[in-house]
Image (cartoon, rainbow over all chains, first blue to last red):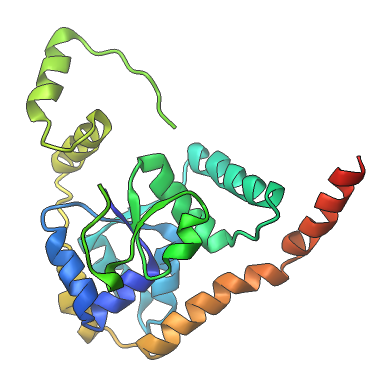
Length: 130
Length: 92
């Protein structure tokens, strides 16, 4: 189940051709929106309750469990040991993808690749990673 | 992270029968549970209804702010502590 970054959802709602094309390519697949990306999407809305209901009708909202906590800590620690900065928002989303063995749909591929994630930068077209 | 499970022969055969091309065993279990719960999602629903949900900021501003929020991690106390932690680790 591909994992969505907030950038993808916002591109979808504004009718971005690349995002809409990616959604067509993913026909029939369930899509997961991690809680942190959902929060970022909701912030820009006048009615977050109605927006959350719409998001829930479209995507699986991913909530963390113990495995996410441990994986998030591992990612941050690995970045620290390599002298890299890893942003918490990216880590929360990356843990979901890594634990599910899937990829992140994002316009910010570099940030997630640095965390060891497979990504599909839908703005560049192409197909989802195998 | 993966966890081993034990299935009866019948359950294992049923799992394999449900498997679609490209799906892992975990994918099959998650899909079946979702279907059983009747939580079928329509990925196009949000695209259709979002135009009726009022925004407080423009999409472009929203994307810019999200990038900014994530970068703001760099100014949190934990991030500032990282270089010091590395220096301490090297000294040890």
